[in-house]
Length: 289
Image (cartoon, rainbow, N blue to C red; front, side):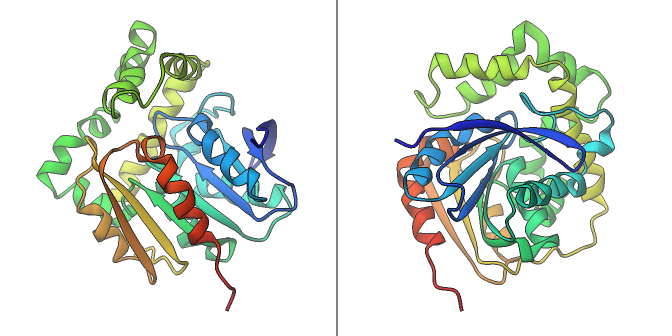
């Protein structure tokens, strides 16, 4: 099994904690986590692809776990987060990578692929709508608005941070443990996440992601067309997202495929790793035109 290495990379003015596996000269895959996850989400993927000759990396994105947590809502805008990804790619001396994102990491992946398509070979999105689909549903789909109650709650000053931190971060721990399939996370893994949430400044930083993107998406005019080949993977039993957003998102892509996992929840990358890893490998192996 490929060893997972740990390092820190400074990019776009922030220091990011990064897990990596595989040879330094292998084709590079960047995995981006969502809320309230962190780089731990991708350990099985790093090992799988590291063993197969890829350089697979997973950062704690800014504001999470051991990465820097800059102050201010604007520090977490989609533009800043995409620049982090581009800077990370450049720090490894690469021109292009395969990009994989889940949840808000998927949002960053959509944004990066739309604005920096020359940097992305192929794009994989797991349970995250395209930004325009987020806008259309968050402000126009009653069922999605009900599921997204926390997104609106996070716009309130101070109260969300207090809720996240209450009872030793029981709410975000329960988000992982109680909205996933039984047995997805071990008690030990949930305690690792609790320690990540408890890092100084994490609660406010994680909430600031939502404070940054919601107002921007409300006014979004850019179609954000995706020109790179895209694979959308979707756990159907998602308590946070209505499933029709997968196909709606594919409509913004020039070349895309949607795969549903009927027994999976929002945490599809954890629950279906054994199915997804070979699926990604097949998607990544292609002949350049």
